[in-house]
Amino acid sequence: MTENKIIHKEILEFPEDGGMIVELKLPVYAHILTAQVQNGKITLWYMWNLEVKDEEKETRKFSIIGTGWEIDKKLLVSTYINTVQLGPFVFHVFEVSDD
Image 1 (cartoon, helix red, strand yellow):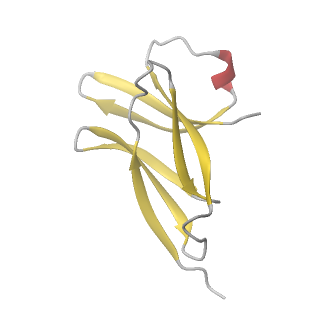
Image 2 (cartoon, rainbow, N blue to C red):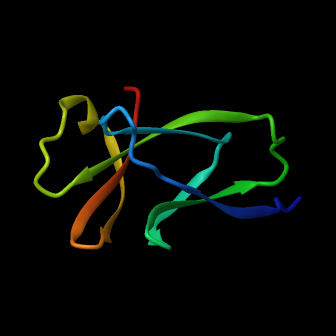
């Protein structure tokens, strides 16, 4: 049976507490495609299986780190997604693992 998939997006907002971790509720097993700037906002695109029910979501953590920023050692267990330019600034987007 062929799985029907769909691509969605979420905006990665900088945390109000000044931290580097952004938490998103995404469908279980969502596959992260990329992060880019769209309409002046860092946006994350992901693909997921339409057979996953809407209530089947999990919290995924992402970090947005600027060039030249010090990186906390707990963020070193991460998967690189992409580098984006927002005006004169360059940011690097990672998915943070709980390992």
